[in-house]
Amino acid sequence: MAKKSAIENNDRRKRLVASRQASRDALKKIIHDREVDFGERMIAVRKLAEMPRNSSSVRIRNRCVLTGRSRGYYRKFGMSRIALRELASCGFLPGVVKASW
Image (cartoon, rainbow, N blue to C red; front, side, top):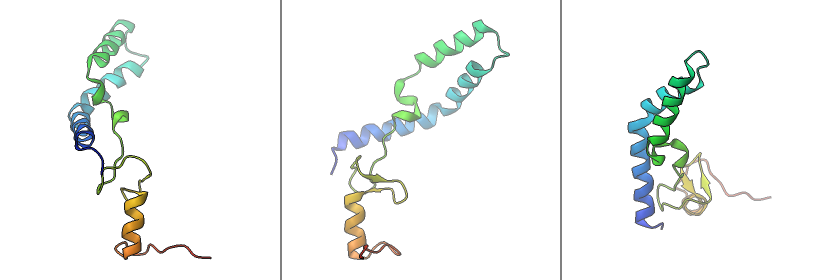
């Protein structure tokens, strides 16, 4: 089980990203538009830099929904390799079988 503070920090980042996503996208659109005046683009860059770092989506860490573990994460299942193996061994994941050859 991961530290509760790490899980909570990640959840806080998710909420911040969701609340600031529209404004970040608008600023990025201005920055990448070559038709906009250079001064306006620099103002948009400054405004984007003044936003909280945790409002960027790349700072969100994928975590297991059961344990909060961040490493060995499978996107398809939304959980870590350890939790996935445990549930698959118990037969709680339909269609997942242990490999044998």
